[in-house]
Image 1 (cartoon, rainbow, N blue to C red):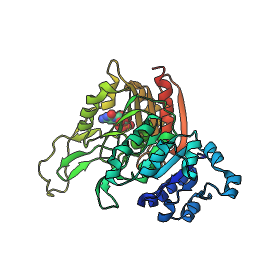
Image 2 (image 1 turned 90 degrees about the horizontal axis):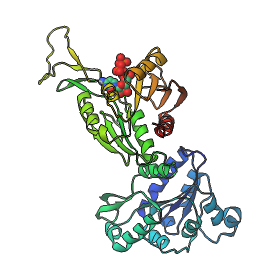
Image 3 (image 1 turned 90 degrees about the vertical axis):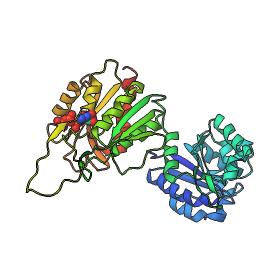
Length: 398
Ligand code: CTP
């Protein structure tokens, strides 16, 4: 995602400075070339050596360092950046940048950059709610500067409240969003993810191996591209993506209810969920006791949510998934036609590197007009990007 992106990471003096180290690791792991600038105060909390070791680049601390200035000075650093991040951003540095003050390496380089600038503020709750700070933040927002908002929690100063640095994962997500072209602006996309669970009794259920990873990757990717995302999720162990509305459901009939309740507001529906086709005809109110050597559970068919969506007259752009173990293309083609879809993502779930509960996938994309695209082996993140490239392109002509 961030391969070959040049990111400047400005670190200010605050106890949250140590979390910038974790962020740096996430950025470099994703392929970014990170150049760190530390303020003098930041060096009281963490050492430049840590950032230098993890970024494999020299750390900039002094504005008037003649050797560094000759090799990669603050202006060329500012020019080459794809993204400028300030983490943690103190009230002091935000105030200085809002006022146009450039009196150290960090503020001077920010002033000289044309790259998007993303702040992740961290400070005491009273500083955060102070009107001077709030006005500075508003001014910067209006000028197009980006923010990853702090969260509520216990602050290092002993207070409780807003002002705690957002998690490194949320800030990383903010960086990805800042570097993603907004080709789905204002589009409402409903995504279903994960398995459904059909209860047999209070302690047992029927389900499948879906982890939800594909649907969650789609939700994150759509959000980065500017869409309003509604994620209707079956039970998973995944963290809710930032900036996405999440509705948690358990059974197929709950998923059915939620999807139908929101269909009117959607431009696109992507059904990545592995919906259980059948549910026990009767759910026992109490735990079924072990008596006979064998039991028979009668199953009733669940509603086919996707097929029902396909029958709606003015329906959203519909993307289905086909989980197959044989005759991949033929079975997927049949589902595309029978469920009246615009596009179907076919994957062979019998392969070790595709389908359920792994981080990679191999997908064949089939379209209503008869065309197809073989995506080969890629991460679920990459596949989410490839699916949305097709959705964005086809939405224009839908
Ligand atoms: N789907 C759905 N509601 C169901 C079953 C499936 O909306 N009750 C959707 C899935 O979310 C997926 C697509 O239909 O997008 C195909 O699901 P899949 O399990 O591959 O196929 P089925 O239609 O269930 O057919 P089969 O199990 O016979 O392969």
